[in-house]
Length: 115
Length: 116
Image (cartoon, rainbow over all chains, first blue to last red):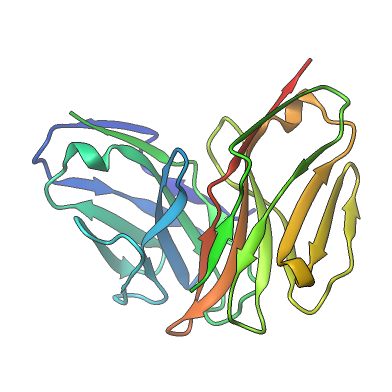
């Protein structure tokens, strides 16, 4: 079974802190994604990566950055956490960049609260 | 631009009732894929089905069925004889390509509650 593992289920951070959300997948997938999920807004794409050291902005990249130093690991960084970044963050991976029909596999999510 | 709309924010039914979740999409691509995902209370999205833009046949898998109509840009999901375990948030998604990589665009989600 494909496994996408996010390092924390729940996090509480203070405003202004630098926050790292970690995601690891074990199926050698090329694509990795970070989404945030908010009520009424569904899942919105923050950043994605289709190869090591490659990254592309999604729909809402402001206030975030990412790092992909190894194929299996994709980190989301909140440079200076703010209360409007309180949300559920979901990591996903999929194989074969450019093929539209591959489903994405998701981690269990990290619920981040910024106080 | 690609967009997915799930107009039903929340649905609540009694167990054993049939329920349909609506999904309407917008895309200019001629080749695309549509997906349904289930998000149970545990939080992890689970893939349910994929349908490509050239295949308008309905699909049935046990109590689940999907109706794809290209003419109305809809991809609706029906659960027959619902069960409490079907309670979850359901997402419809559309697949497109940006700079050679697959990108999924999700709808807002429908929270389905099945009451015993």
